[in-house]
Length: 304
Image 1 (tube, helix red, strand yellow):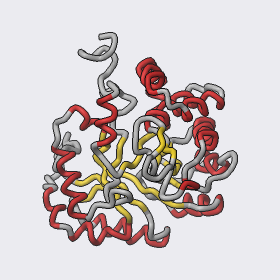
Image 2: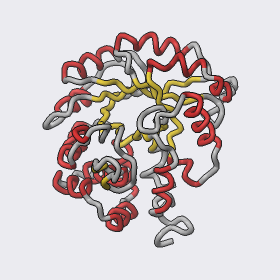
Image 3: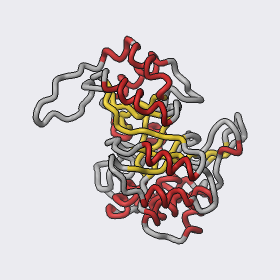
Image 4: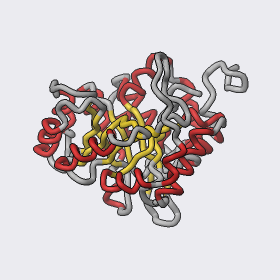
């Protein structure tokens, strides 16, 4: 597995447009976790769930598949031990304590990260304060604004607790929810300058930037976003970040991906932690079709 794509895709099967029922989403997640396919390592094996649906998750018979083996020295998370959870805090910060307590009561759930909507700069500050002492990574989805100044506030945070990062929305059910390449490049540059890592969500339904024939919306590609992050992490001019985010030249994008050095790949993934995808098969299939999964020098990889 190429390091640029390893553990990149969170399972957002509960969310539109897939919007699977809870039981079906858990069954698919289990199948992905048990899979031995080449693309399995592209999945983070985190299951994204709104806080408002934790009761439904805990009551789902499919959750019983996770075995909750007793912890032993040297035991690491593996398939079937517990469900790694990314909590989407749709109930507001007032519901954080109850959500964390509910997960603590279910040994099959392991909280790995929290994603928090924060629609204003003041809300970002309030969220950072409210998350003090929460010992897992938390990603704040702040407002879309020129300069993305709230990202600097996340980078400057020195309170107790786990890692704090930013979250960017790359699309949605309306055209205005898709940031332009210039806007998205500004976000990436803000993260690079403030040494803030980020997660992405929505709209990344393909590897390469494209127009959806059904909706007419132009979607960002996850390959474009990886390369845009790589350029920002390497401090390329922001115009060059815009260029790669806007590119629809599949061959050029694939060639650039395969030329990324190990150092820049490490910097890239230190910034770009993961993105939520309602499909867990499409990203793997597209990456495989483009020859992106093999490490440089692996048998069958270009130049091997």
